[in-house]
Length: 333
Image (cartoon, rainbow, N blue to C red; front, side, top):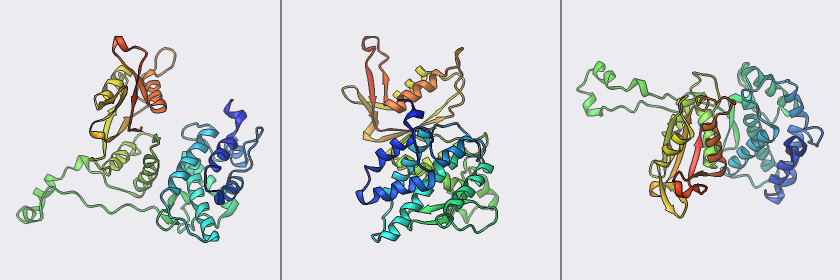
C-alpha cells in the first residue's frame, strides 16, 4: 500500500493500542488537537500547512510516515524515562508536554530558523498554555525542553564543564601558567553549549531506544563535534565506538570490511562486537561517497540495508548468498 494512500493515521492508531488502556483515548485526542484528523484524502491540518510551505522549506525532505515515526519514537523514549503522576489532571498535563516536545523536534526540528518561528507561532495559536513561557522576545519553544525528572519546561543550558587537565594540582604549583597552557590539547577540546546540550539530549533519547540517528546541518554546524561529545559519555566497558570516515572513494566492500573487523563470531551466522559488548557505528559523513553513472550511491545502499535488516553477505566464494546476522550494533550518521 502506498504511504499516501495509507496515511499516517493507521500508524498512529497501531501505536496507540499498544499503550496503557487508560491513556489511549487521551493520546488519540492529542493527535487530533495538534495534528488534525487524518484521512485518505487529507493528512490533517498540520501537514496541510507544512505541504503548502507555511513553515518554509525543510532541511531534508521526509514523508509524513517518516515524521510520525520519529514522533512516536521520541514520545516512546520519553515515556520510558519518566515517572508520571498518579492524579488524572497532572498525568494528562505531563503526557501533553512530552507529546508537544516530541512534536516540536520530530516535525519542527527539520525546519529552518525562520520556519521554526512560524511553526512555534502556529502551535501557540492552538494552545499556548501547554508550551513554555518565553523569557526573551527572540526565544521560541525550541529554546526549551521538558526536564525528564520534573516533566516541566526548562531552558536549554550548557552543561558544567572543566578542562580535563593533564597536570595534577601538586605538579601545577611548580609550573608556570605558560607551561600549563602549553600542555593543554586545544585542538581536541569540546566545550558544551546550549545547542550541544540540546542535541545530545535528543541523540541520547534515540540512542537509548536503539534507534538509528542521522544528524543534518550545513557545513561547520558542529555535527561531528556534537556526536563525539555524546560518544565520550558512553561507558567503554559496555559500548564501543567504530568511527568510519567516508570519502568519495569509500565503496561497499571497504565499508563491510571495516565493520567486520570489529565483530566476532557468536555462533552460527551471528556476529557481534567482542566481549559481548554493544557497538555504535558512526558514519561521517553520508554526503561523501560518490554516485555512479545512474545517480545511485551503492555505499549508502549498503549502509541502508545493514541498518534496516542488520545483515550483510558473506564474502567467501563458497558461502555466496548466505547472510551474516549482525547483533548489538547501533548507528549514528
